[in-house]
Amino acid sequence: MDDWRIRSQAVSEGANRAPNRAMLRAVGFKDDDFSKPMLGVASTWSEVTPCNMHINKLAVSAKKGIAEHGGAPLIFNTITVSDGISMGHEGMTYSLPSREAIADSIEIVANATEIS
Image (cartoon, rainbow, N blue to C red):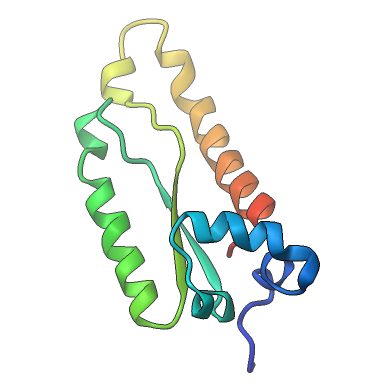
């Protein structure tokens, strides 16, 4: 496959996509980034739980690796719920449903922005 921008082209190609490119320039994209596949790095970083406090470092590392290998990475966040904190009170009722919400939110961002 010569062009790995199967999804990225929808927001980066043509005169009618100038507004899309302008938004991406505002987050740091340069001219050559538009010729690369845009790859999303979903992050559950938060300070809500110690389980996720280190996730931003992992997301930044993944972003660096993607950039080093020819991609145009974008980090985006989603929610996180701590089973440990939610135990023993009404918060427990949110733990399992949050997993579906997390998956849905990642799908929404990926599809709305055409990142892979």
